[in-house]
Length: 436
Image (cartoon, rainbow, N blue to C red; front, side, top):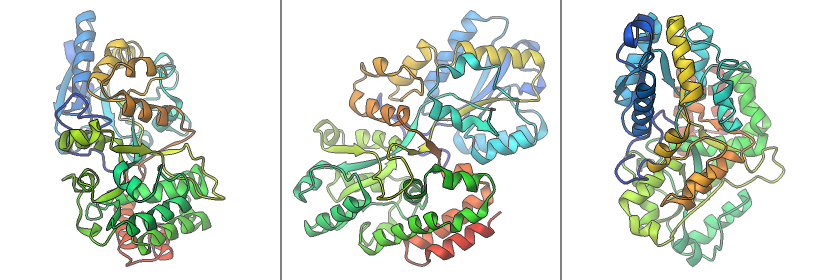
């Protein structure tokens, strides 16, 4: 899934589990930073968990006049271009906001960020292991989470499901196919909403199916550079299962014109035109904004992705974006690195930080969030999503973030063809094996 999903706005929980952006300081870490070099810099994205960053930085600066953080906030697209140039030229902010995956691996290979394995032990002790794992490269920590968890959830319209004779969300793939047939028989033309024109929502299907069939080790081989995993029998089976859903009419006949950024897939659910939707937890905000009565009436269901009979994946495994992350620039001075490390250990996910995240409708990635979430107006969904993350044996980063940019584009192009019935599982695998 893409680095930042749009439309996270408004009400207290409107940014619920929203994919948020990155951070940065007005003065690059390699060019002095705040306070003539005794402080440090950080760049962050506007929107999403922005207020939590402001609150945290303000609290830190009030208590550390000799090591202040100099922060600056950017829109998503502007940040991505700016940080790419800054890191490449050695003028990155002290704290580099990133999405881990392929980008973090490139940072590490080019020695642009420092090893945080030993220096951030205090912070790491507060973080859920499944989330922390995404910040590792070759077993070492080079990035630590800085905001909220963003798992992919199977949403449903409880009314339509009930009218179709379905009492609960499907727990197996066979049940999912059966529910598709029941919804169609009940007159629901779009059993499962899908923003096919946007393409990236289709990633969620292959990510979950590949995990459920082949286990997390299947994609781990791909990330490790083993391109032959694309044609592994488990991968081909997962791809064929997508074709099976398409042929069964699971997504209706107009999904190729539905867009996600406009919230059209979400609208199909709360306007009673679709039974289910596989989307990131961030769209909970859209449900609240676009049709709050639908949510308040308890008509919105949510569940984890079904299991696959005989599959190697744990049904508790999840996919999505574990969080966004901070890395420390290798170009920063020793004083800046020391101050930034102190901030990470002492201030990141302290009580103030966690409260700010929850007040904004976001689920923190700390081990002890349950008691704090219980006070939220949206505690039911937020607690459920937190439980998904906390109990997940594996939290797989979205493939378009985990892979290189070239591989990601090939992935999206050929996945789109598969969903439109214009390509086969083997053709998809062949294209990915050749991608660089």
